[in-house]
Length: 318
Image (cartoon, rainbow, N blue to C red; front, top):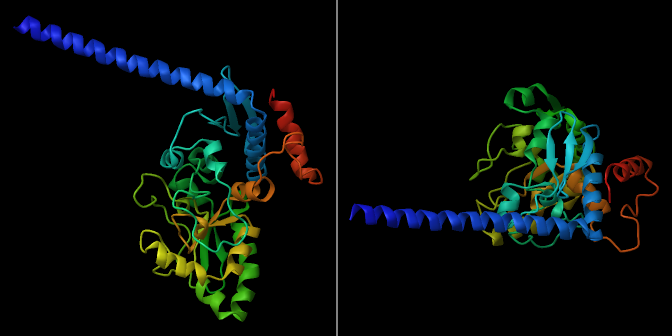
């Protein structure tokens, strides 16, 4: 009886192991197929180059090299030598793309620069996917390093802390230079903007194990309203808040490289976050590539961008 039980267990373990190996083999096969298909797709290649261009424009000096491995995966190499994969070729749902994104995932959803009249669908949250190795390279790898990079920025009635790296604090100063005079003239603008609900705060995003953008000192929450946040209120309440929100505030922030949480399906209307790569993608490459046109079409008169374009062309084999 004991021998029979052991034999049955052995058979079950063997079958289970074979199934696992089969799934692993299938996963490797799927990755290889995805790599082969994408590596020959001109639309995919164009999007890849555009995304890397947006990253390099947004984080000047932090990207030192590009590498393509034997199966066609492209890596962005940071100044520290850290490599970040552009596309891991894995199938992901919306939540997986947000929780463990590659560069393609982060830039996939186009941020709407035009004014929105209705809340976006719950699954549409452009800018909520964040590449943490990149953020840590740019703004500080831990709490101590981040805090060394914080500087005081005047927002009129008080000073707040913001990260000086990558021109983040300078961008917030530029916002306030326009926003404060407007707020003095328009009470509706003033009431929506001030008093601020905070900038730097080393914490996790609610309900996750991921750091908030506030933890890097690159986000500001303006005057808080009980209907601002999707966890606090219904979509109907959030829509009413959106209907009455001064869009002039949004335009000023977006002009200076910030995205607005009001343009997330999981809305956060008081929240602004310095994400120049998301703004660049929206500004220059909101439309899908047109076959026959250069992948950088529309930037031919931008010498800074074209210098990066030529560099990307030299680094990539396609």
